[in-house]
Amino acid sequence: MKRFWSLLLVLALSIAGAQTPTAADYNLQEGKPYDGTELNFLICCTAVAQFAALIERTQEFTELTGITVNWSNTPYESYKDEILVEASAGTGSYDLVAWVDAWGPQLEPFLLPIDDRAAADGVDLSDYPEVYLDAARLGTDTLYGLPLRGHAFMLWYRQDLLEEAGLEVPTTWQEVAAAAQTIREQTDMEGVSLYYNVGTGQNLFPWLSMLWGAGGDVFDENNRPIFNNETGLEVTEFYANFIREGLTAPDAVTKGEQEGWQAVAQGRAAMFPGWSWIYESLANPEFSEPEVIDNLGFVAAPGWEGGERTSYGYIWPVGIFSGSRNQDAAWEYLKFLTNDQVNLELVLDKSVPELSTVVATRYSALRSPEVNETTGGLQEAMADSLEQARTEPLVPEWLEVQSVLEVAINEIANGADVKGTLDTAAADVEEIMSRAGYY
Image 1 (cartoon, rainbow, N blue to C red):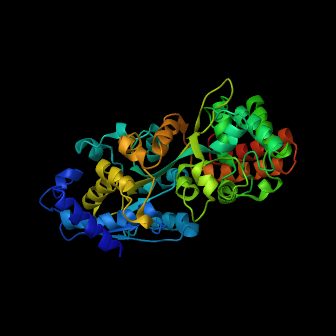
Image 2: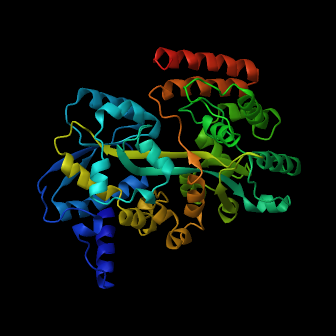
C-alpha cells in the first residue's frame, strides 16, 4: 500500500509537469558506475516514520544508480552492542551505519573519514547545525558522517493555561518554575512534567540545559569533573526543587521521557521540556486530548536567568564502515540519504500518514516557510534551539559517566543531599577518567 501511494505521488507530479529527477539532482554520479552493487545498512527501528519514508525513497535511488540497499532492523535495545560487534569484527558484512551521538567516539577506529569526499562533491556543511556536525566528528577535527536523524530540545506548553493564568511563555528555567508555581496554585494540574528516573540518561537532558546555560559544565579542559562546583550545586538544587516543591508530580522520580510528555498529552500537565519529535504525538488525536491539540505551543528550550539559552541537540549521524568493500557506492547512498532535496521532501510529504515526519536536519528545511506552514512553525523553533545547542561530551567514556550522573540525579530527586551526592559522583567520574588515562 505504501508503494502504491508513492507511485501515485510520482504520477501526480508527472501530471503537474514535474521533471523526472536525475542522478545529478541528488548530487550522485551519472552513468551508474556502481550498477549491480548491493549495500547493507546497519540501523534499527525501521518503523519510525522518517526511516520508513527513506526506505521508500531508496527505490528511487536504486533506479538512478543501479545500487540496491538492504536496511537491517536491529532492536534498539541491542543496537549499540550490534554496532560494536560488527565494527570490531571487521567482517565487512555492513557498509553503512547510523549511530547515536554519544556512541560515536567508541566507533572512531572503525569509521571512514569523509572530509575529502564531502569537499570533492560540494556537500554544503554550512546547511547543518554545528552541534550536529560536532557529533559527526566524534569530538575530533575529522568528519566521519553526516546528520541523519536529529531532534532539538524544546519547551512544550498549553497556551490556554498560560493565558488563563496571565503568564507569558517562559524563556528561562526560572520563569518555567514561576509559571509552574502559579498554575499549580490556580489549578489541580502539574505545573511542569519532569522525569527523574534512571534510563539511558534521560533525566540529564533538562539538567544539562540548565548547567550549560548557567555557565557550568560536566568537565573542565582537562576532562576533570566540575559539575559539583558552585554553579553545578546551584543548578542541581534548582532542578531538584521542581519535585521537592511540588511543581511536578511526586512520581516524577519514576518517570522517563515518555511518561513525561504523556502527562501533557492527557491534560494533566501544563508544560514539558522534551524533544522536537514529540510533536508527532502531542498533535495526534490518537495520543492527545482535543484541548491539548488545539492549544499546543512550543519554543526553544529555556535559558538560565542571567546566563545563556543553551540546550542539547540530539543527532544520529550516518557513516561508512572503514571495512566496507563498497565504500564508493556507500558514499553515493550516504549523499542520497542526507541530500537537501530529500530532506525537504520527506518533511513536506503528508500524503501517507504513517510516513509523515517532522524530522529535518538541514537549515534549508528547518527554515523553510513551506515546511513551517505544515506544523505552525515547529521547525523554525527547532532551528532556534539548535543554533544555541551543544552535544553531550564526546569522549569514549561518556556512557559510563552518564550512568553515574543519572543515578545521582535520581537519588537527589528522591531526597538525597545535593552536595554530598554530587561530590561522590564527581569522585566516581574522576576515577573513570583516570583509569582511561586522561590524567
